Length: 67
Image 1 (tube, rainbow, N blue to C red):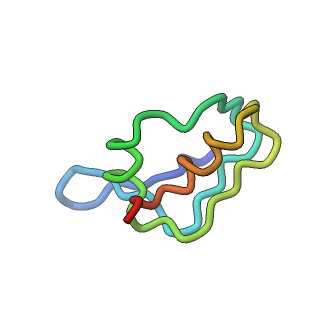
Image 2: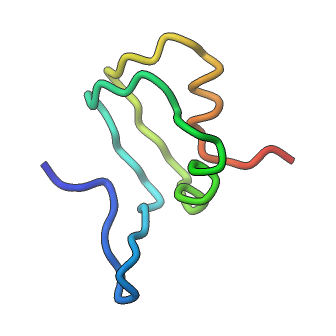
């Protein structure tokens, strides 16, 4: 299984623009601040076959700051 991110020269990691997290047993989006920081470059997100039961979590997982 490949990681959904990769490391850059600075030692930090970068999340790719197309993020596929299918069948990862995800139940929630996590903390909004972390999502905004880590997923700012994500343009496509695949959460197929996860355990999210609340549509508001799907909205938060879209990784975009609210304007």
